Image (tube, rainbow over all chains, first blue to last red; front, side, top):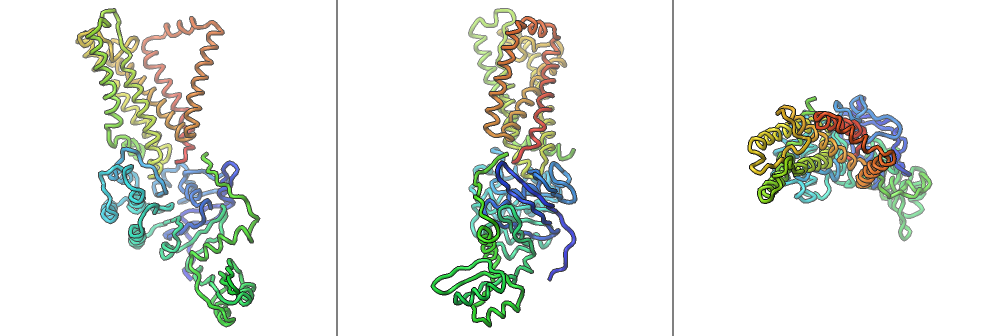
Length: 310
Length: 231
């Protein structure tokens, strides 16, 4: 077990965000621990972007209270100067070249590191004199990543920052993020769908689904909190009934189930019952928990896919 | 305050856009007018003037619409508050209006010294906008500029906050408002009163006071709008 942390950079207290006819976040309460990397996970439309918009003052919650560095972030320059929010599809002015965008960011972030920005530019092989508008999708994402890392903002949020980035560039991003985080610890929140890739980086996981928190834990304690068992249908069902089954697949008399367990003793018990026991990866756990929702946790609501701009 | 200055500086990245384009447009307008005035007897009537300088004011308005629609989403992307962006933009607008007023005042002086560019052309300060004093000329040319900028910023904010629908709504609403006002004045048979009121105002009140009032009112109305923009 890691030592209990007491300091939170951001707190979300009973926050609800409602758009016309659509609740994006529903009574969410959580805290973002200082000097940690948190993965904000969830399906499309789960409320991840809304959560980040609230934490960075881009939106104001319908009800509840958001505090970042002890104050509400909305229109609060004192909070915002210590916050950097890199989002998918950030718009850059048409006439801004890569160097103009980085220059502007360098002006406003007090902790900005020019050397880091320069070395990242080399890593991602970006043409500094080309207008951002003329860059490919992946290169535009790289501009955002450079701003996010070089800002060294005490609270840095990346909302699916890898759009269009190839696998090599994504690995570069993870490596550079981890290296710089080790030297300059800060609070980082990342939303992503590439859970498998990012899992080694994460210290905490916040999983939301349909605007509700499903999971809010550190990855250390999540490891071993669930197992994947395989075996005859009857044996799997018997084991699952004793614990907390999340998701079961059955094929030709054989079942495979993701089951939440209490600890190593349960794992041994499964093996003794003749089941094949494998560890459950973070991605499998997230998928199993998200899939479980409509059937067992709550009555099915039609998903409102209409994007409401208000 | 420091961040406000930095937000202002962001407008001056590639100053050709904000400074160059309006002067290019008005330069072409000016060249056409000088040519026409030389080729036709337009300048022979006393008080012959051209409205060509309006091109400068309208181009500046468009530049400020774009300053908001282009720069606001990026400013918020690098953690500037809406208020900081707004104040930085207002600062740049005020400085630019002053600079443009000064430039126009110099051009008016040259115009008067050369008998209207040798053709009796009154281009840079047409009609009521020409005042006798150089310093007052800065005000008479610069204040309307500030009003156009303020309206441009306001239109940009409406677009960012309410999108295309908002922009159309603003245009239709403005048309209905002024159309309704015209009908009301007609019904009251008050056109003469309105005309008299304008005639009674001093040149300075019309060229500087009224534009500055418009600039201030539009700025006050658009501020609550920018506070609710979501990038």
